[in-house]
Length: 362
Ligand SMILES: Nc1ncnc2c1ncn2[C@@H]1O[C@H](COP(=O)(O)OP(=O)(O)O)[C@@H](O)[C@H]1O
Ligand SMILES: O=P(O)(O)OC[C@H]1O[C@](O)(COP(=O)(O)O)[C@@H](O)[C@@H]1O
Ligand SMILES: [Mg+2]
Image (tube, rainbow, N blue to C red; front, side):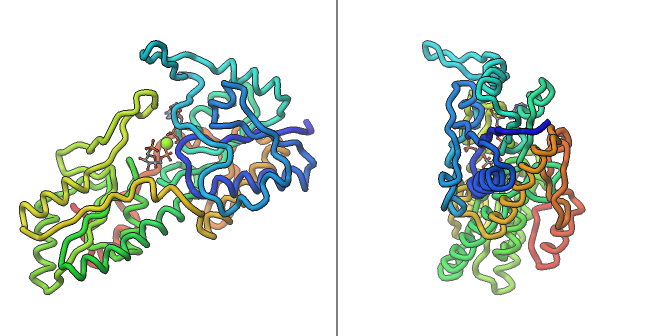
């Protein structure tokens, strides 16, 4: 089958590099294959509501360094369980047929879905319903299976590392403990990598429930050794042993309703109460998802975008381009959603951190 027209959408949480993917998809589609490209607005919401725009070559000029997504996104619009508010009451409806209608009406031959695990769940269901779906893996959390990396992660780690560097100097001046909370709901990749890069003294990740007493003992030992400040990097999904996640709010329309945030306050309060060390807390939050992608992410996003077009032209539907080692390889979307890619307890970076004298809370 020779394809003539493709659609593209970005769904789930935004991250630096989505525009670099759109840039690559549109350029390659037009230059190499003379395809027509349309972009659906706000993820699957745009397909349900029939909102899209044509993407011409000039529309993507200069968007590579821009954060966010020029198409908009939504992390609530699951067409199979679409949130509908009526008289302040929420109920869910199956709007998947509207997506299929939009797909047919627009005359696209393939749909490129940029997203993470949630988006890929939806994409896989549409693939099983007969749509020609191609995925492009994104998430700052780097928790998507089947690919060594997702774009957005390197940018988030860079932002977090710079923040830790800045916090280091004020921690040092005031002889304080500083607790820095980074994103990572169920996977501690951002905390682990930015913690190592920023020289964190303690790194707490969701995969290793932490011992609060151990953290306090460690900080006191540092003081006894003449180190008058400490940096504690904590993932938002980290939990004390026997304890639970700290939930900031619930987003009722979401598949995973909980939004985490605030574990750093608990850790900071406990440090101060148990050791008397003056402590301050910083939550980086959505800062880590905004702004310009790093050069690494721009290149990875460009490679993914170009490969996604290639997969569409080859008719390799139900697949996404994955980074395996240095190579981009086609991977079934199914593979990516089989499980979440958390930090394995035997991961070499954990050993590296320990060898630097970092305490991991266990
Ligand atoms: N396991 C799942 N099965 C089906 N839909 C899901 C699942 N997880 C999330 N979703 C839906 O996918 C969409 C995007 O999910 P989200 O996790 O926010 O983004 P991402 O694609 O970045 O992982 C949301 O509409 C959400 O309701
Ligand atoms: O933007 P929201 O709805 O507050 O979501 C916050 C969550 O999204 C993330 O930034 C990224 O998650 P996704 O990759 O699933 O989009 C998480 O680290 C964080 O817990
Ligand atoms: Mg997700």
